[in-house]
Length: 502
Ligand SMILES: [Zn+2]
Image (cartoon, rainbow, N blue to C red; front, side, top):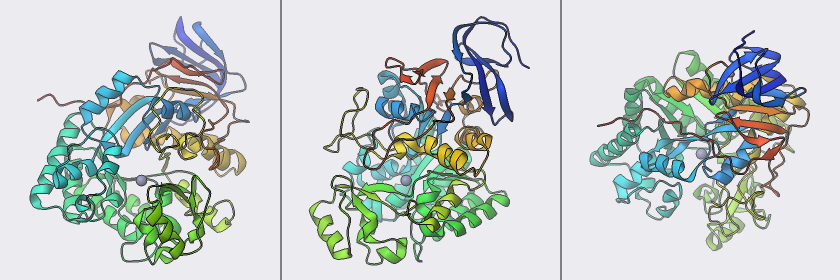
């Protein structure tokens, strides 16, 4: 097979190489030089460092299209989940240049990148608040409902587009559309935003406007709109967390999206393998008198993170909302542990053909609710997030591939590597060198023990890192060695589109 001459910086020897891009699934070596993969196959030359990977699986590092953490702490937890590139696409930020400068200054463990945030542009245009390159900007402006509920005027739409255009000029990798957080936005505005994306040949990443199994404002209505944007503007529409926004209508949603895809529309999908989301108790849809019909769930499915309390009826819920609207809750929208029908529904979203696995990883927060941005390891007692922030990829591989054998390992790995890389490749040149073990590709590599690979985070113990990753390499540098974190490692590089100099 391929053989280049050494010496190499690193040779990973004798592992089971699983590389969906080439279709390779067999024993071999991977050599790394100057942060790139230099040889794959039987490597004769020596490495300054060698990893004995006999009995282990060697794959491209996992690529997460949906990660809100974006801190050293979040990176480390994701590294143990096999992730080497972690992107904030669903929300994104503004201003883009400042965000990339900040990340480079603080140093990142994993490769990082962001989209331009449509909601931030809306807040700026509609209430005059100047965006700060931090997701908390949204929460800080949530008392002014104009950007949430109103249709934007022509002047406001113009400013929204100007700010998004600037974000793209500064290298943002598409436009994040948190439509559900500003459900008042009109179809004409969204069409203009998608036209801008089409013009710049970048994807949009959408949290669809509605999550309900009842019309009007149903999930299906929201997906049909999204299909319309794809068809009428030519934009690449990427659907975020297909599992959580479809609720019980996921079979119908999956059929509709598959049909739209089959007709050539540029629509892609991601999902995470949990039936539980997280939000604040004050979220308005909990108070909807039709909450049960719209979500197909019960009040018992709403669980307070701090006390474990659940509810029995709307009155109890409303009383708690009035008292404690900012409290974090888990919302078990599908009870996948106890209800086989719900598990089937989750499976449909996870196994949607061509779909990526993406975590929707949340920031790690201190007990007082502030974001944990420190560098202690392990994470301090009491820091919380969501199990998906540290277990999405290992959970998917353990449950769907190893335990339930629903797809072969190479296809499971594709959903964590090649598929997300190819979703971004056409618009973001840097992604074409990721998600594959090929000569010249970035040396982002996961080496794991397939028999013991598992997520460990639970809703009662969130900050447990996954197990089974023996070595995780980012741009040729180890961030996990022999199953242990390399504390000083900061090899993460920006994933960014070319910056327009003007
Ligand atoms: Zn979302």
